[in-house]
Image 1 (cartoon, helix red, strand yellow):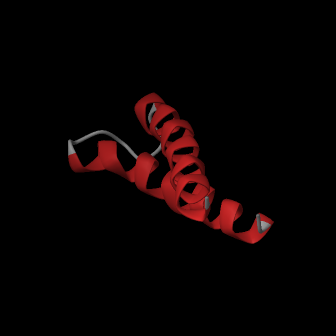
Image 2 (cartoon, one colour):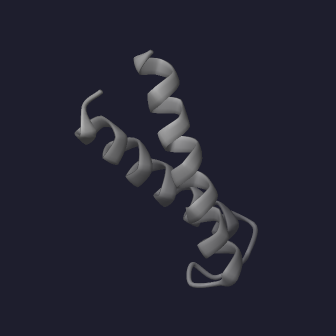
Length: 53
């Protein structure tokens, strides 16, 4: 598996996960955005691994 694809999935997932609470009125630097970035990064990696295999 290409490391760049995994990093791309993590980056996109983290950005989307961090920005999702902003749509509901939270700050981009809030605790929920930090947790969202972590979860989004993990989901992004999982999606890339599932698509690659």
